[in-house]
Amino acid sequence: MQLPQAQLAVLEAASADDAQSVDALAAATDLPPETVTGALFALEEEGLVAVSEHVEESITLTEEGETYEADGLPEVRLYEAALDAGADDTPAQMGQVIGASGLEGPQVDIALSNYARKGYGAIDSGELTADSDADPDSDPEAAALLAIAPAEGDDGVSADDLELDDEVVDQLERRDLLERQESTTRSATLTDAGVTELMAGVETAETVGQLTPDLLTSGDWRDAEFAEYNVEADAEERHGGRMHVLRRTAERVKEVLVGMGFQEMDGPHVDADFWINDCLFMPQDHPARTHWDRFALEKPSHIDDLPDDLVERVERAHREGVGEDGEGYHSPWDEDFARALALRGHTTSLSTRHLSGHQIGEIEPPARFFSVEKAYRNDTLDSTHLLEFFQIEGWVMADELSVRDLMGTFEEFYAQFGITDIEFKPHYNPYTEPSFELFGTHPTTGELIEIGNSGIFREEMLEPLGVEADVMAWGLALERLAMLVTGAEDIRDLHGSLADLEFLRNAEVIY
Ligand SMILES: N[C@@H](Cc1ccccc1)C(=O)O
Image 1 (spheres, rainbow, N blue to C red):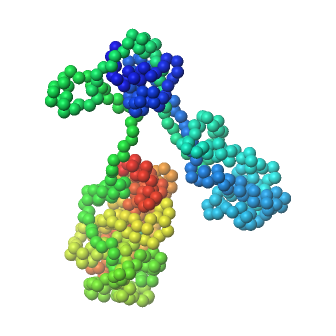
Image 2: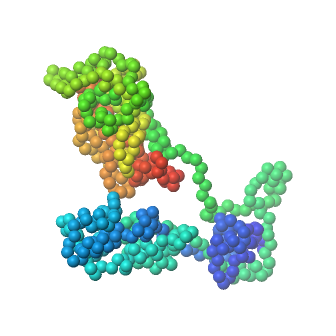
Image 3: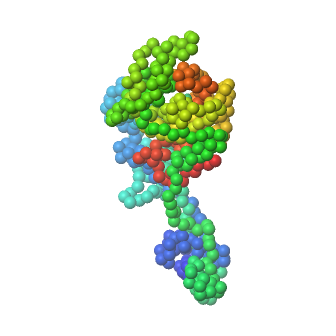
């Protein structure tokens, strides 16, 4: 019989008695593991080898798990401090024991929530007792951490080898102290037919793996035997470049909005407070206008050019209000304050610029505009907040708009991303009445997350801008939409210096 070279090499390296793994066969034949796997599948099809698969679970400690493996579990450290404080005898002040334990930050909560569960003692109205029978040396979770901790150079241990208690492992997994991985190993033995063929003598068949220009020009391709493709063979993963999930989500959002009849707005990232806040009837002493939220510009610090007539009308709206029963804010209004430059805290500055007629000329109703652009806020970074983020800004100008139009627009928009369960909550903005926040359900955590803010622009804002029709408007968070669409649980996985490359490589934007 004739076999392609790789298959023959694998057949010769295989044994009838001992199952050999792909890695062992790869080492013996000097072939890459994926070639060996391919050859094995072909040989199995010929009935010459039997291939068995073994799914192995391996366990590794997370960074937090490693910390506790080295320093002790927080609840054990708390117990030890409690014993030192004599809490096995008389209850001790919780604050003191925590101080003495050296536990800090989130570890304190972790210690407290595991302390009673694991029988180390009780916590009651600020006092802590220690159970003198508890034995941290036989803490099963601590023992499991030790057993799993890798020896130098090891990458993960086989779960089977460890003989760990399933419940303990589950518990540690819930605590995010370990991770499980599964890998499939294949091994092969010669079948009787394989042995027989080998004894009868197998020759190398000249097979061609790749069609070359030579084969084509010489005409040799006519007689060549081509190696078969094996689409199931394991192969090395290659990661090419791809468009970032956020960028892809943004592109998709633009397509959807253009499809819904919207036109795109453009405008400056650094803008005068006038356009960012004053035109929105935001009082100059509003807390969001202080340095806490705002990235002010030092150079230049003020805009040169504002339309005088508009400044005058906006000032009047702030001071006196709009309409017969207008009241205004009774707070100072200062033009210099309105001229100050900052990184825009929302892209609603683009909407005020456009609605005023000063950006692209007068806009007549009905009109629909949007932007998907960056906004900047001096927030505290956490799993749902970044200092800069993308807002999906939009507005519709028409006669007789109602809340139903607003809700219907969101339902139509989010449905394009498979999100059909958005929820609305009444909200307050100085520039809209009524106002709504939008929430979506996170696909994996099930948590409700805020995805946007919206409303119908009020008279006090529209009148100075010279708009007579109704305008409904919104600012939606692109990152939050991306979280709902991709299942990302932490916004910092998406962008910034902590971005999760693995996630970015594999995340899909489904629509
Ligand atoms: N500017 C608001 C969003 C918004 C825009 C327009 C109308 C209502 C709300 C925000 O950043 O949250």
